Length: 219
Length: 334
Image 1 (tube, rainbow over the protein chains, first blue to last red):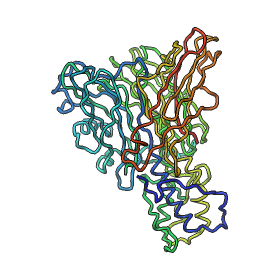
Image 2: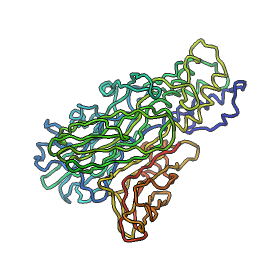
Image 3: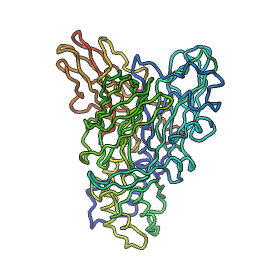
Image 4: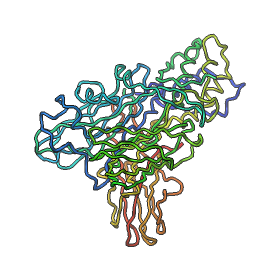
């Protein structure tokens, strides 16, 4: 839901304003609303891909033992299907990040036995913790799916980083304010999306062929 | 000059600024902070995408992408994930600069490879970026590529960089209408353009393994649709205009083809004309299409409860050769 009073951006003619113009309270109120609305809508597409036609999907290692080598055990990320690499997320006033919608495109390669996917947002080195805790705010799990054709699945919950995860994800990096200028240190979020899987039977193969993660300011 | 960019946004309270209310300077300090946050926090130019291309040992492939930069972008970070069945190396060139040779490990032990590249100039001119990867002795799988701008610490106070000096609005400063007009109101339309959802969708097959078509009927170039949603800005907004281009060529001078995108708004076609025998971004001026905007009144942000799914297809329209597509990019133009 928009944080601006009107829920939209209100246009006005900036050419009408110069140094001597009177800025009335209504105009300033509109400017406040516009700043809020632009901040709401600057949400970014962080991850967005679908495999090209004819390209084989990402699969779990076929040597895994179902029920043992799954993310429900302590085996680590051996059934990791795909990683994005670290990206930024916008941080809200509360110190948490924007919420994110997740979609995954997958199948189980079996009409009877299922595959289940989990998606987690985690800083580098923390993916196992995120994947292992499906109740975490940064992790979401798909329904179990038995299908031989991949389709998109919309994850039920939005995921995000709370303040504890944000603390782990913040990083100082060198940037510049002008081309060729001196380096300056800036802080931003470094978090990656990791998709992992579980299968109900050795006949099933979790196959990931697309993924989307989009920031969104939820109501 | 104190047009600094805060790390987190603030939520301004519109009720604090209404007719008959006393003016409180603190509210304006926050407004300037949010203004600078909108302008200076970084955006994605190429969302993380998976070419899932295998480059043979000692082989080479270039992954082109198209994007529309923001004036505030000064340095880009390229993040590339590669894996290899046998540990090997890969040499990465970005914008024809040799940025490094890196070790490539198994999927289980993948390490994101990070390359920061400074822009040659601050502008908003649509541009191409090239990521060239040469595999070492063994083959390399390219699993993810993304490009994002780095955050800014300080913005210049001009109509392009859009910085606003918060000290002019500091508590106990004189309330000057000139400051409101110059630092906030005058810049707001430009800020609306700058605070874009820049990279909407990009996929690069690369020069080593372009997507090919010989079919006279349209065939999907991907396994399925991909959803793209635009910003909701104005009253009554239901669609937003996005730009797109394809980098394509035909195998001979008489072959021609089309690339088509279909979504809720209909379809639009980019022609790959006969005679296009070297890889070229088409059309010369980016084509546009309408896509659904988000609906901020809905819990999931979806308009009508569904995503706007886009189907990208290609066909051969003339000749007997092959239509080759190296890359496809969709972005919100300034």
